[in-house]
Length: 219
Image (cartoon, rainbow, N blue to C red; front, side, top):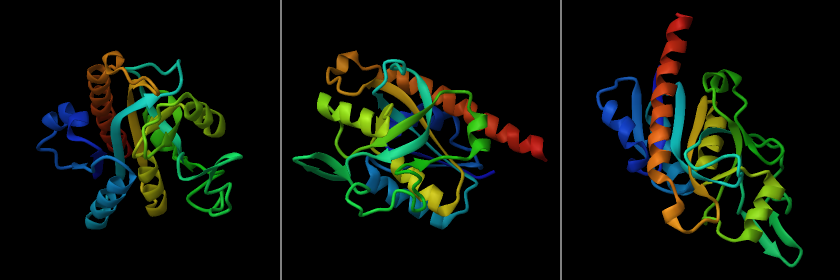
């Protein structure tokens, strides 16, 4: 099985990379931060080679007190949270403005869903709803908006690009995230980046092993 692993920054997956430098079945690409960079580099990689699975790994912020710093989750649906307009009546996204059909592929009820049950069955970790943003959320009003409008549990800057492209190209994918902080907490002394990266890479290594084992069992 050919697996493509992508991450926004190299430090998020350094422990994994150090242990898989010579792997013939796993390609690794650092995409850069944000949807645009991720979309470009991911599209370029899948145009060059056929992959059976794409894994996106990285840290994220949590909106949910039950999803604590250090926890590892996978995203089963993703929303683009800040593509729209703020008017006197409040925030409207592309769907509210009728610029995008909420059920036009690859969207389902506004979200980019990962409905591949075989993929999710590999992972025995919480499955959450994510929002992808261009600006890291810091205000309480915006936090409340994303939680109410989208049911947001975690936040990243790249997840929607993965979901959108892989759904379009019909490539199985997994978005694996480890929580480094609560959204809105700007005191980085309270963040747990080291623990988040350690737990992320431990889960990533197990995930790749489990995928390979699942493939071998089918032979």
